[in-house]
Every structure is written in C-alpha cells, then in structure tokens.
Length: 392
Image (cartoon, rainbow, N blue to C red; front, side):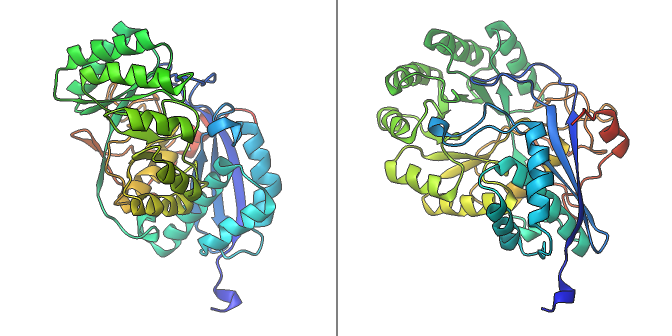
C-alpha cells in the first residue's frame, strides 16, 4: 500500500447534546440525569466521507475500587480536541489498531472519549466503501437484538405499572435495578413478578450497591423465590463477586468489573461471573469491544449488549456490535429509539421523547432490527443537533 492509498482524518467536530427524557432513570451511584450532556462527534475524512460517533460520559461511572474514573461531557470534549485529534494526524484511519495505538500513546484511559472518536471514524470508513459497520467487525451474525427493559430505581407501584405496560408492548425480559435496601429490593421483585406472571424473564442489577457479599447473597437467595434469571454486578470487586457466585444458584453478570480483555481473563480465573455486560464505550470503541467479546467467548461466557441510555448514534453502534458478535446471547438493555415524529414504543425501552437521528430503528416482537445502510445506517438530523445542543 502506498502513502497515497491512505485515508486520513481531515476534521473532527464535537457537540454537546441534551435530549428530553421520557422519565427520570436512576441506578445506584448515578447522580446526573441521563441524556443531559452527551458528546456527539462528526468526522470528515480526506475523501469527503463523514461519520458520526457518540459517548455518554458520566462523572460517577467507573470500575471496581475506583480503578477507572468518571468522565464529564465537557472534559471529554477537551480530551478529544486537545489530545486525540492531534494524535491521529497522519494516521490511516482504516487501520483500526493503529488508530487505537495512536490515541493510547497520546493519553491514558478516557475510554468514552476514545469510543466517540473511533465510532465516527469507523462509520466514515464504512460509508467510504459502501458497507455497514458490522462488515468491518467480522460480518453480520444476526439481524435483530432482543431487548430487556430497565426498571430504574422508583416506587414499587410505579415499577409494577411500567412493567405491565412494556410486557404488553412486546418486551420479554425486565431488568430491575436493586442494591438500595434488601427488603425494598425483594419487595419490588416480588411485586413485579406477581403483576407480570410467570412467562417474562426478570434479571436484577445492583450496580455494586450491596455493602458486602454476604448482603448480596442474602438478597439474591430471597429473590430466587420469584424466578430471577441472574444478578448483575451485586458488589464491588472481583473477589467479592466470586463469593456471591460461589454461593448463589443463579448466574452472576459482571458489568462495572469488565472493561478490558484482561478484566475478562481475571473474572474467569476467579470464577466471579458467568455472564458479561458489554458495550462499545467501556473498552474504548467498537474494535476493542469486539476483541473483548472474543476473549469472553473463549472462556464460555455469555454476554448481553448494554449501555448508558444511548441516543440514536450510540444505539446504532451497539446494534452493529451485537450484530457481529455471536457471544451476545442475552437480551440487552439498550434503548428503543423514537423521535417526536416516529414513535416506535410508548414506554418499552424508551428513554427520550426525541432524538437526533431521522429514522429510528425498527422494533419487532421485543427486538430491535439492525440497520442495513452504509456505515451505521443512520442519518443525523442536523437541525435537531442544533436544537438540542448545550453549551460546551
């Protein structure tokens, strides 16, 4: 390949966007509103191709034992502008390993910032050759992704009412946020199970909320009476997760503990979890996430596709990742994107009342269909991008 064959980044713009939420969505440790300042990136390549990326930085979101640190929207913009974009000068952006190596040399950490840049580049590269992003990740393994609707921290009566509505709209798996108080947590699982009947699946997610593995084991054992499928990240730390895993009859899923391939290896070695919650942002991009999934598969771990209440661009990225990954076997808690003009669901999976993509993804029988057009298969509405922009 000659120097002239290379495809390079000409320009990368950043935007801060806040969408109107359908309702407040909370989990243990979250103290900022979802969608209230997400980063959108627009990459222009030197052949004229344009690609879009997105990151959902949260200042209190990180790994076990504060091993990783939260990112804020405005800090993410600075990281991208002052460090990541200069690091990519002269890099052939089709060479995804080289893209990541250049960003990692420039700055340690900041996976959400790196993910927003990498997704925009992959989208642009895929558009430049006229193929969907999933083709650059190994090809399409599936054309739809099953969804789990997330019941955030809310009053029990409200949780029951929402659960019934989303089951009526086609959802077959619920994820109930727990980790607040054992009695409250057991009560909400009991009430939801009684309201929805035996058929729908219930998984629970504590977001590291229990103070000790003993509390977590006690809570999970009591919830098994109501047929929970598995428990996600009940405690902080791989050692404590392993204690829960050894003592509970339902599988354990790692989320906050699983950011890199090395994390996956450590989790498997400790027998801390059987399942992994995976999304493109935690490892630092689609390419890194696909590698992580391969390692998970080698250890026999089942995975879901999850995230941080993505807008349409980020949702598209996760859909393409899931499309290319045979390891994704569990229903994932990604949003059902709707716009003010096109409403896919009233409640099921719906985080926002509008979006910045023109056409939301099709929703059928509890699944989102993977978009088929070039790149991410989306069109960004730049008028709405301006309408929902917030000051950087």
